[in-house]
Length: 127
Image 1 (cartoon, rainbow, N blue to C red):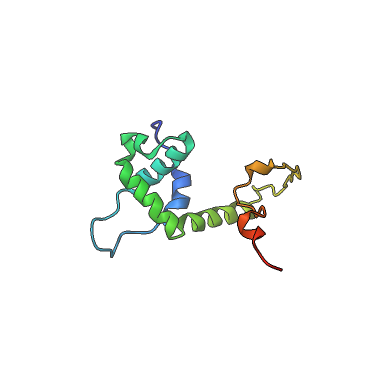
Image 2 (cartoon, rainbow, N blue to C red; image 1 turned 90 degrees about the horizontal axis):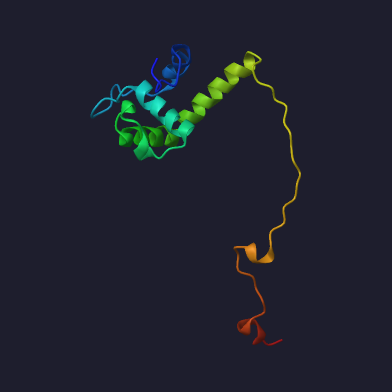
């Protein structure tokens, strides 16, 4: 196992069928899904820029484009929903939630909206 391998074979077997196929599409077939998806996960896990992605995951542009495409078409949302449902059915999720009701007030100058101060334009109105 290399330090760049993010998923176990068991984890990948659950994710892989939910990814789109390049069969029947024009142009070049997709680069290996596992390599690219592991590059996406590695990038988020390490907090690095796309350009700093190790060469073991292929060109960073390919990884970025695939992430963008899978985000736009809702693939990540479907994968997340399916894995969440699977874990919930197996009882591996604790749905206990802690809510903090702390109130933080901003200073009046921290507001980013202009406010009507009764300036010159407003003073010239007639009754």
